[in-house]
Image: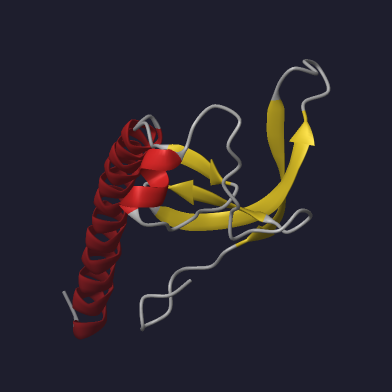
Length: 124
């Protein structure tokens, strides 16, 4: 054997090792991807509480106790202003109240704005 043959054999062994490592990495990646997809599916099935907030009001308990049938409570949102879409206590979007086409007895929300993540000071 000469030095060239040794180099060639070493190179061949290195190539074979790299190929085996590459196949192993692909198998790990496949398992990780499958596991991640399964975990993502599990996460996507978690129920969340969604609310559409037309507005809110603040009043003393004495005024609250005086409310009766037919009383009107003024809200802080005005007619035509977007309503807040809240998921698990966090505003995620804003939109307009609409009547659902398929069922005129139900309201829906047409999203007009998707709210980004909260800023550093905790506001949206």
